[in-house]
Length: 152
Image: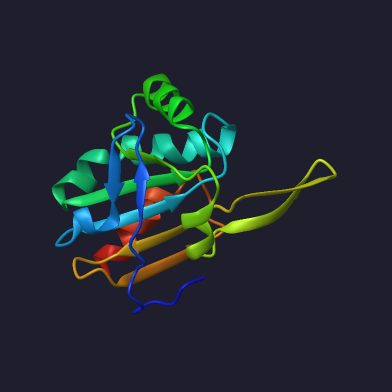
C-alpha cells in the first residue's frame, strides 16, 4: 500500500459513460479512491450500495468517490443502472492504475489463481496527498468507516 502523506499518482481512465476522468480533475476536493474486484458481485454491490446510501453525507462534505475495477465500461454502466449508483465508476481493464496503487495482483478463489483488483481504498486530500489508507476492507461498513475517520 502507498503511504499516508505520499503524493497520489495521477491517472486517466474512462468512466461508466466512456468519458475520460483524471484524478487531477478533483484537485481542491477530497477524493475516495475505492478499488473493488468486480461489478455486480455480492461484496462489491454491498460496498457500492453503502456509498450510495451515505451519498448525502459525502456530498455535504464535498467528497468525490471514484470506484475503480478492471471491468469494461459497459459492465460499469450496467452496475450503475442496476443499483442507482451516484459514484463515478472507472474502468481499469488491464489493472495498470490498480497496480500503481498496489491494489492489483495474484488472487486465489475456488482453487483458481488469477490476477485481479484487491479491495483497497485511499482517501486523497485536496492537495493530492494520500490522507487515509484501507487494505482489505469490510464492504458493508466501509463508507461509514471512511466518514468516521475523516471526522476524527
